[in-house]
Length: 487
Image 1 (cartoon, rainbow, N blue to C red):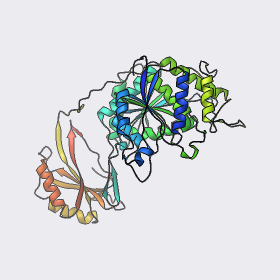
Image 2 (image 1 turned 30 degrees about the vertical axis):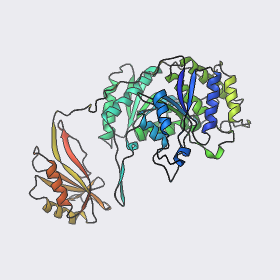
Image 3 (image 1 turned 45 degrees about the horizontal axis):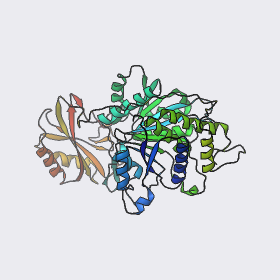
Image 4 (image 1 turned 90 degrees about the horizontal axis):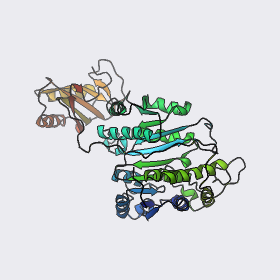
């Protein structure tokens, strides 16, 4: 985290829909709290998409964040039918903000079915890898594929960040939630790295939960959690679930942290249906600004602003429409911000204070290779093909085609189930994409690229090959999964 200085340049992105309204509320509160911030207003989102910028992010916005290393942004709209990827995702990738921090804490005056149970945990979500790398293909017109990318480096960075966050906030336990029981290589790698990293933080307890059980536990007994760390998609889904426990996305702040930049944002959308009507709830962005102040080293100011926000909710005198209830008259965004300003210097009566220290960002080697295999042995090659032949017809043709090569057809699979040879009588509804698994006739023989190309050439006489994966054994361990029914 940044050290405290006399003033802090921060890139400010107003956003779309209600974005400018909640951003203005935050600016007013921070100005009243006399936080030394110099704003650089820049643009991203819907209007930028409409100007023909496919990323939704202007070059001058990127340059500003590169210079300030810190941004606060309102919600951005992702238009349907034009533009490329989400501008939010683009910004995260540009600056490798690999850590998404989502605090989940019961708020005073906000009634939920969980009120009074003392919910107070943080979801730490890996933010740039996994399925959100966005690498997808139509292998055939009717079969789509997405590549789930989980790296040793990315896993180590996010796991260390989770433990460092626990240290900074005085938390006692970090839970890792994965689907390693099914995705044994990708989610399994994440789990293994977590277990390795945990040894460097002996004062903090650690445990593992299967992610579907974690979702169940968050609903049944959320108070058991302290810090929960997950891969990207799991973290995306469960962090939204977690926000519902404390009142919804309108109260959900987030920080996107990287080594060279940090981007703070509310989790909620742009809500165009109420834009310009002075109805938006700025709580989530104000809470995100509190996270930003801590990042900037302004710990006292962060506490002052957070306390004023909590007092405003605790007293319930001025609340926006989504917060008011029980016959209370709703107020607008501007009135709510003024009430927060009025409460600067006050402290909540019913909300336990949590001491915060500066978060120490983990240091992980920038070397492209963190894991080197002492022994690498070729096992074969998988070839995905587009075909309308049944496995029973295709199999003998491919076996004959590759005869004489140093590998043979071991099996054909359909979506992870072995269907040729089909000794077990597996019933699998056929699709037009099959995987041919070729294994070396003798383990340890060389598998040259020339042999792989010859396999593809011979296979193409009977089916269109669409994807190829080499099969290896690293340090004695197979680096690929087996199909259902495979020996």
